[in-house]
Length: 229
Ligand SMILES: Nc1ncnc2c1ncn2[C@@H]1O[C@H](COP(=O)(O)OP(=O)(O)OP(=O)(O)O)[C@@H](O)[C@H]1O
Ligand SMILES: [Mg+2]
Image (tube, rainbow, N blue to C red; front, side):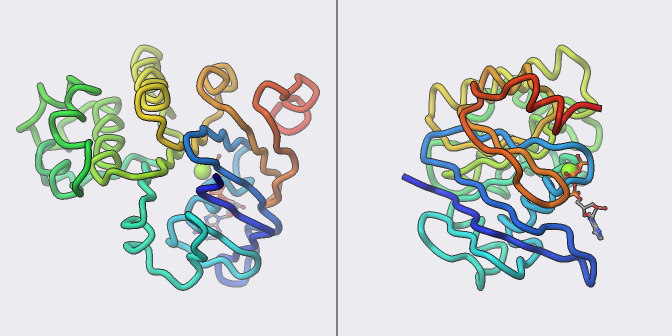
């Protein structure tokens, strides 16, 4: 069943149009990779999904509900868990406080998040501003999980991290997929890492979805054309 569906979505920043025609679909239990070069509209699409930016044309359906008139917190409560670009956490709160303020009832709580990321248990009472970049990313993912979402949205979750830490993040994403069957929308530039977790792919170019299909059907011609430098 379709959990998230965008049809012909357009969106603007003031007078400047950023999205022209975005179409995508995330099925229950599926991982969709959203790809595209810098500035093509990936984060803007995520903002539209999370209602941090209003779309002008087209439709956004979450669980078959039109979210056009909903405020961001309602969409979050419906089950969209966002891990934003730049891994924002509350820097004046401890790791534990960051996690519990986000909590909503469900299988994800401090214990289960700490099992996924043991480092967060070790850093439990540390201020989040004192964490390493990788630990902050784990905390940002943990915060989204604490809301017990039906759809996780990860915007460049491995950007700027050391290779070993990136691997830890990818492993966690793979575990979320295999152990929980959670639907995931993941933005990343690493095709190799995405290929291990993604079922489907959508490619954005200049605010339009120009290719979508099975991840396995992405050929070098397609990736060169839309993602190559
Ligand atoms: N707050 C903003 N105000 C005006 N224009 C913006 C704003 N944020 C993004 N844009 C523009 O919208 C377009 C899409 O940007 P977006 O951040 O969605 O791209 P992206 O695909 O996420 O890129 P990246 O890979 O660099 O994160 C770009 O042309 C960008 O300059
Ligand atoms: Mg972005």
